[in-house]
Length: 468
Figure 1: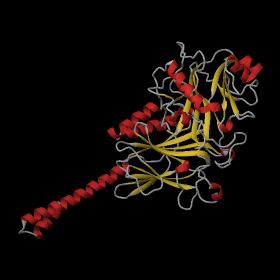
Figure 2: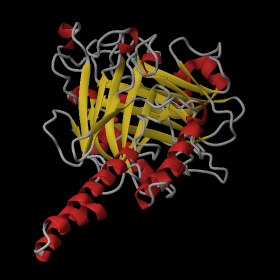
Figure 3: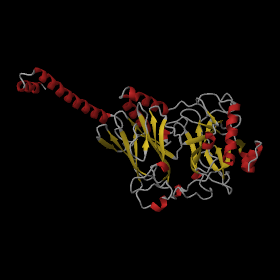
Figure 4: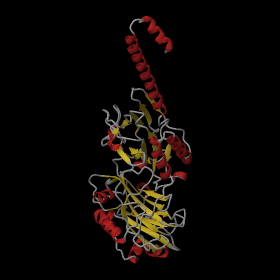
């Protein structure tokens, strides 16, 4: 720079004003180039450095925050102040459903795309859209843009206007024999900087859940204030302080005198998805010779686990009313792990399309259980259990879903540690039962001997309930 200035001075010795203006312009150009380079360097250092560092499948250390073991999801931190946008490119999995969603730094969902709303790439077809069977020979590729400014992409996910964002990819119920990714590789992510430069990142090296959480948290904290909120969320959500779901009559040990009726409540968790709606019944505790019996009508669902398309109903379940549902048994207390789930495809139905779940001690199905009943092992920990019925993507024609209950406002709200009064719970449960009709699950305690002698009917009769 000094030598260059000397050369300028020698060329224009008589015009000092011109020299000053020239030097100023040259300095500004060099400064702009330096700042641009710094911006590019900052973008190259901004997250993500690899895609999907965090994998949650409900197994091992990731069994926290009310997981469903039939779902796997992967999360990537994304800095929209450093990257203008990200382009997620993938292949539709062989699975019941997949979703892409964005969240703010604190884990609140910003936007979401269900598989049926994702347009396939040119020359590809989506197996989740009507008529996909006729296009089975085509590729199944898609592209989704992520950023603060919408582009001309068919598929776009917005992100918060400030702070970091999370991109979360989910796969539910891979086809039988497929891996948890549904036989498709994890999507790649192309990161686009403001100057148009881009880099494509592949999936991170797989590692244990605690290591992935710790490594991602450390990386976020190096970003200062912009990463602190995301790091705090990750640290707290990975070991959440969740309170019980509430019960009408609970003794000093947190156990309900009788299982409270199922009611809609939003359960906090690690990247809760707005498309998932839940009914819960909490405060359920073990006792000698006691079991829990749950009875309800099963919504029809696709036979994808057997390899059929999403348009083909599972045998014996009736017309497709719901893309996915499951019944799970969790501990209520932190870190709220799941003991077991029975997804729709694994649930036994009777001749009329009804399910009967029996929650009982042990790790394997007991020999005394009726042939058309499904077994849920009672969590061995001496803590209250929480039953969770999940509904995802009901058909437009199906008006008896948990989503329909939520639309009516029959939801127990407020903070999770707020005590729920008996009248409030009864009002929410009555509304859910009226909306769902036979699809509403009824739940009772029962003596094991009574169930063995008289079946589920004897259990409900002893509780003063008569069911069809």
